[in-house]
Amino acid sequence: MKEVSGGVCAPKGFRAGGILCGIKASSKKRDLALIYSEKLCTAAAVFTTNQVKAASILLSQKHLANNKLRAIIANSGNANACTGEAGMAAAKKMAELAADLFAISPSEVAVASTGVIGVQLPIAAIENSIEALGNSLAKDESGHMAALEAIMTTDVCKKDACVEIMLGDKPVRIGAMVKGSGMIHPNMATMLGFITTDVAISADLLDKALRRAAAVSFNRVTVDGDTSTNDMLLVMASGEAGNAEITSENEDYSTFASALEAVCIKLAKAMARDGEGATKLLTINVSGAQDEGAAERLAMSVASSSLVKAAMFGQDANWGRILCALGYSGISFDPGNVDISIAAASNEDVKVCAKGAGLPFSEEDAKKILAQEEIEIKISMGDGTGSAVVWGCDLTYDYVKINGDYRT
Image (tube, rainbow, N blue to C red; front, side):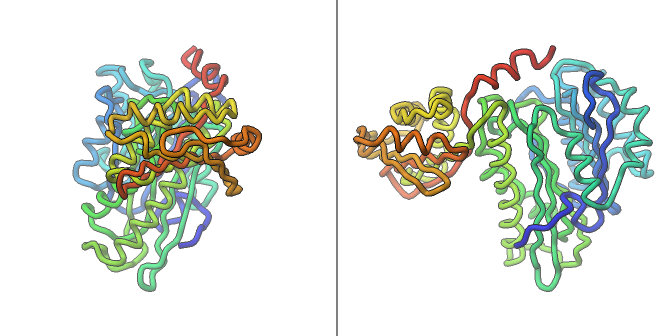
């Protein structure tokens, strides 16, 4: 597997673009994106589990029922959630407008929205700009970057990836973009994620690969404990690579699924690092749990703890908060078996707890580790062979500043 450029436009058969259409009058950034495939794609998606779902989610779930798509139209600046019948009409209009550009069926278009909840979507702004959106499409990285900017909201960093793998003698590419910075917590994280690939694969195996990739990536990220109304992770496969179609869980499937998982993990970590107001990426690595599911719940409990997150911001090796968070995870374990260390990307490591009790350690050494931008909390449960890694970020003053007046 090698990294390549081009994002969602790198796989064969895809174009993308993005423009400013004025969904939020105060914004001067692109806010309307389009990704288009020259042929009908096999598609799969994972959506928010929040019972309150945006109109775009409800419509896209319906359009994905047959696992076929040609395009994705997405806006930022307005979530079109909790907007009633008018909101659903606006979502349908977005699909119709995009479909009319290419003389395809609206059912072949997925719709995505992100932004403020409870405000009617100014569909006229989209309608007035749809021709310009179509004209913005490009087959190269410029189109990818324009679309990526258009889906961002409070994101500070652009988050994208593209890799190439070989299936037999055919190069296959996977390109991806995500947005997500706040309201991030499984299942799924608050995000829009769009993936394109030119692999030839059956619908059921594409769906299986995407769900596994999401389970070990975006569903293992937390920023603030809030799961959005608008989360969507969607993949379109054009089949243009020319590989033998993947119809069974053979070696080609394993190679593709592993690459898709690697792309999703890279982007999930980038989302955690770009958490609203965050200064640190936190990796919580739990081993020795009863099984993988138990390890994941234990790790997520630590990553979600406001007290642990605040301690990481304050560069305080307060391991008691970590043990406490394990204790309310809902997983049964013996606290007397737990070991805890904190580590940095530079491989510096300080063990702070053994067998459930504190160890003498250098606060100065611990502070040097906690001053770095990437911190790993290593936890050994001494209870089995299960392991899991999740990602989060610290809790800072800026998180409150960003969210205190987000709507107004």
